[in-house]
Image (cartoon, rainbow, N blue to C red; front, side, top):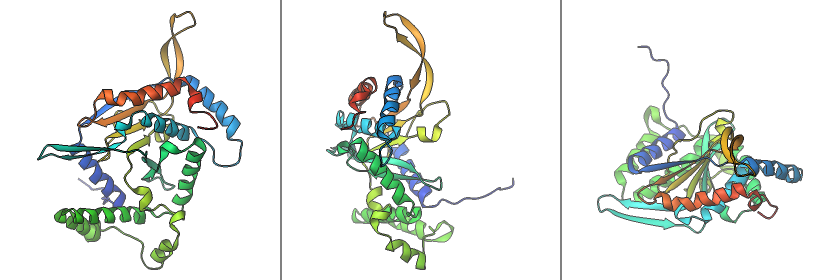
Length: 308
């Protein structure tokens, strides 16, 4: 059998592979597919865009609006905004809930690769502030070298493992990252010096990649124009929940007319997916989040207003 090519993992794939392995080996995932009717919501959003996106400054996108709605729904269901630590041998667990919402959001880079960036304190941001935050991240990404940013995160994580006594694991990481054909290729010499000279406010740093309290993934941005929906997403440990946003779709839906009679009508549907760690949460504990999202979709003015 002829070999077409061999591609060795770069640092991005190494981090993803390690995290994915840890997640699927240790976390019992439960997935719920939510299909809200957003026909009215989208009609109001388009009106909102026409009114507000004519102003100077970053445009308020559907993604920004959904992140705002999700942040407020998380505040209504704080148990999903948490970290979980479990000692399997001793059967001991600890759940830490947070009073701030730091969203880990997968971000498509200019070269097509992906980086998960943490948008901090999203529960206290207005729509305008979220749009400005997104624009600033895009600005800083233009000067960011993915390998350097991710290596900083990986190196710090390795140091933390050494401090906790995970010596063998840390040594293996260091060896795997710096030796042989699998060595991570980083900037050197003048390029490295020039990159370090870029102020942190102008590039993505380890602070932007620090573990969030919950992950929100807009899969719809990559699947626009396609059918189907998200069936499962990976929970990033020690988080206990991940929320996926699908792509808008037109589907036949049974609704009631003004006379209370049922009829079939073509409506706009936004498939969403919420996945949670069953060691920590049951469905009843994620229901308040979904209930709040349903309220927003039925009453768009709760999110689509100048003070939101």
